[in-house]
Length: 241
Image 1 (cartoon, rainbow, N blue to C red):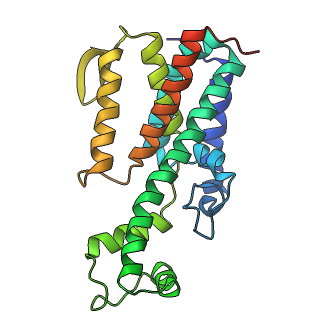
Image 2: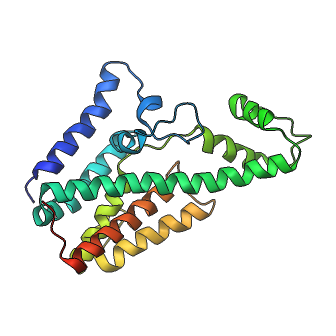
């Protein structure tokens, strides 16, 4: 088992504190630190960083911290602390930005449909505030309106975007390393395994087959940013001090 490197140790400690401390102190930091839709009243630019230290449950925290340790450790050992931290936060912030762009595309598409039906911006805001609307005037399906409301109100939490960036960097660095999932315990080389995971996220993100409230486009965003940075560093033998 690889030793716990400095940056990863401190990231895990901060994540654990941010998960358990609010519960022990009976505080809810979701509105302040989770990543909200930009038009939501609770949105703050700092949330592109702070959402990476918020998690929706113990399993969510455990899997992300395991991924950080298992795949991040050899990268930090190779790159060093500063370069690894730059990569980690770049992938996490990039994941948040791409997630926001994907949500904006979906939200704005529904918004424009409502405007086209003659619904005023004030009435749309009232729908978003109350969750109520006159279905005799609005012909969009209940599913579409529910998605519209959810895009506006549901914040994103978790380090998953940064972890996906780490996964991709690990795959580029150690393409022949054998990986497996708990529910599919057959070892597969990282160069095949990791693209398969990302393609599954793309599929679930673009269809209605997603299981649970998962920010698939944040995963994809982290993977894209992670690939760009890791590929550039590998190609250019980039030094970071």
